[in-house]
Picture 1 (tube, rainbow, N blue to C red):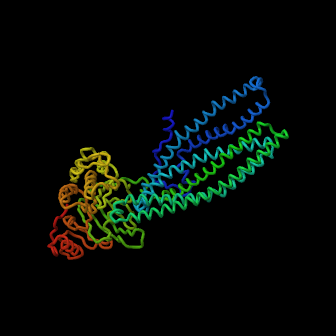
Picture 2: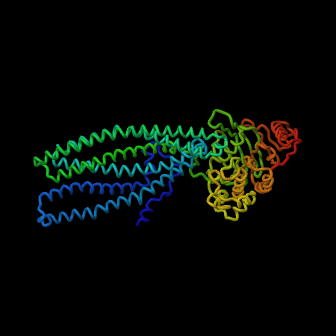
Picture 3: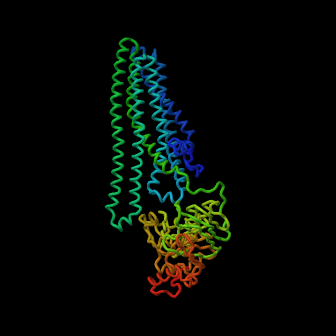
Amino acid sequence: MFRWLESRIDPFAPFDENKTPPGTVGGFTWHYLRPVRFWLVILFFVALAAGLFESSLYIMLGWLVDILAGSTPDRIWADHGTTLIVMAALVVLVRPVLHFAHEVVSNQVLIPQSTNMIRWRTHVYTLGHAVSYFQADFAGRLANRVMQGGGAIRSIAVTLIDTLLYVVIYAVTALGVFTSISPWLALPMGIWVLGYGLLLWFFVPRAKERSLKVADTRSQLVGRVVDSYTNILTVKLFARADEERSAVREAVGANTDAFLRSLRLNTSVTGVLSIMNSLLLAATGTLSVMLWSRGVMTSGDAAAGLALVMRILAMSGWVMHTVRDVFENIGTVQESMQTIARPHGLVDEPQAPRLRVARGEIRFEDVSFHYGKEGGVIEGLNLTIRAGEKVGLVGTSGAGKTTITSLLLRLHDVEGGRVLIDGQDISKVSQDSLRSAIAVVTQDTSLLHRSIRDNIAYGRAGASEREIIEAARLAHAHDFIMGLEDHRGRRGYDAHVGERGVKLSGGQRQRIAIARVILKNAPILVLDEATSALDSEVEAAIQESLSTLMEGKTVLAIAHRLSTIAALDRLIVLEEGRILEEGSHAELLRAGGLYARLWRRQSGGFLGAGEGNGTPEAVSF
């Protein structure tokens, strides 16, 4: 039975991954609760039945007191035996069934599955954001909002159905019982309900505001801590532990202040509620004694009424704290909503076709891109890279080299013109198919905190063990991989590399990245300082492998060390986003322009060749 119930909600059921969630708390919450609305309705009716039965127990208590008061021991079973047996049967049979049903619907059907369904959907939607979205925020804060948002949304729904429904049932039952006896007896309860409503009216908006502040400062604190841990090597190398402690201390202080301000409100409201509860109990008790002494109500009525009041008073503080928790969760949802519910910056057109790469020709047609500014970076770029051609991009920092590769990969949309691959506008095809056709090795290689095998296999889903090892051999990575062992004793290809590959040297990470690209075997290859982290011996060792990798592929390479790209078919010299020069290495040296000056500077400064003779030394590829 449990397995059947636990499979009623599929956390991974298909959904529209590109639909932007609503920007209001109610809309955002319902957007993620809508798939489980049927079970929320079931929970409502189960909770309603359980609440009505629980409140009826106090009425049954009153009947029992009256039966005992009006009977003698020798006649009680003869006169009221059937009634007592029915009451006992209801308590023994119906109450456990209702409570069990409530727990099953809550715990087996709703809580785990709906929580993780929301987390899954917010994560998938967040993954769809552009790279710039992630660059503008802490990874830890984004993860925190995805994780906390799922629990908060589910908690709001379940708490409102469970807790507040119970309170309403008890309050209505008490008012009904008291009114049936005497309107005077119902008066204190009516005044208390009105006062409780006014207290909530005062408390809720302030709790909401302060809870949002607590959630925001908590996320900032988590972001600060994760940022320190992620960049621990930089912290150690620059001896900045004191600054990091200071930054986290400031975030802890801000969160503490916000937390205390929220708790001040809770303490004040709880004090007022305690006074209200005491007055209600005293008034109800006094009126019960007066009405009983006048024969208006029985002893059972008085016992049931006072028991109901005491139950409501016991619940009132719990409800107030529950309402506070609800609005803390609303604050968390607001925070998650502000981060997650943003339209995707880069989206595929509806039914976008897959990119078909037959030859691999790349064409930039009058392309402009300014990162949203009025000008600069790339302006009116026209560039054609023929199928199978190996092209190098050269220029000083800020010339636009990396931006061009980002536009080719559609990490940003062009602001003018278009980029075509084999005549297909890349903005009209699916992003996944575009990036599947392009293999990239960057200077700043980041590995996943998984095994070496998983990191290499990231290049192609379903790759065999033999193919993974062969790719590692071609990248001259196999030998060092076989010597690896992580802190859990996993060896070789099973060893984990640490967050962002921190357990490996820069050269080792680069060789893993090159193995990944070799395995991917895409028709277009982008090399952004691909061998910058390798020492000369290792770099020379993998040149043959890279040359093999580039055969039959269109290659776009960036290198500040000009000797690594001098042997390519054509070099494009950029300055302020425009093509300044283009040609082969020899042609550009004869032209005596910017490339020639850069070459002389590097060969003279690093190769000891004076002004250089125009012959590339230690040419890569």
